[in-house]
Amino acid sequence: MRIGLIGGSGLYEIEGLETTKEVSVATPYGEPSAVYKIGTIGAKEIIFLSRHGAHHNIPPHKINYRANIWGFKHLGVERIISVNSVGGINKNLSPGDIVLPDQIIDLTLGARESTFYDKDTVIHVDFTNPYCPEMGEVLIKASHAVKLPIKTSGTYVCTNGPRLETAGEIRFFSIIGADVVGMTAMPEAALARELEICVSGISVVTNPAAGTSEEKLTVTEVIETMKKSAERIKSLIKEAVVTIPSSRNCPCKDALKDAEL
Ligand code: HPA
Image 1 (cartoon, rainbow, N blue to C red):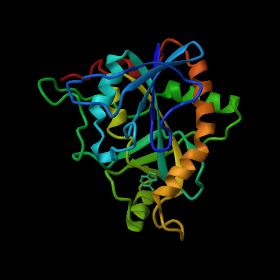
Image 2: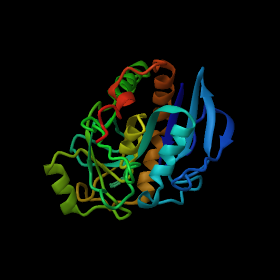
Image 3: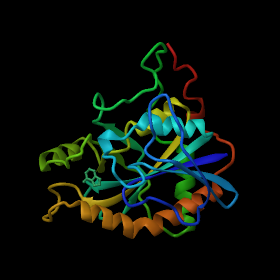
């Protein structure tokens, strides 16, 4: 069983991951963000990909999400843990908090290549619950084991970026029920579902969302908070990887059943 790990801003590698090999994958959709680093945590094989490129030179709206996810499938990955940074909209969230989102509002639709099925096959995958429930449970148990308090649910609103939001947009997102805002959860999660790969998102609140604090929002703050949170995230991931069951017992693995027209 191979587990994919997507690192975002401030999480470019994972210590304890003994990298044994680096592989470039050529995909029908072009180039993935970087080489895939294959390694192990305990007895589990992990494949790491840096979402924004090895040198953080790919902005969220230019990421080749299809190539990234196709590459994971090609390498035999069945589950992906996807780490991202977010702005906190919900007043109960502060920088440094870790959220496992269970819902997504996608505001990137139409702006990004968001499906593998745009030619001859018409597929509508069920996406009621965008993240894998089984992996969610594993991560929650892992957080208890490593004594790391996390928020076990939340709605992630995904904007296209690269600009940050206006205060008015954040007020609107709050009214429609969003807890956090980021730029990378979509179409990543939907593409994985189309290839029957499970995904769990780990969102790190790196800043109060626009207009919710007096401070000016800066990228330095985002990266600094992410760096400070890296150790906690890594310990959570290591514990989750070690305890994840080897066979899947979730709806994601059968996402294409009854999904074709
Ligand atoms: N908005 C959008 N994306 C983000 C933010 C934000 O405030 N912080 C980190 N990623």
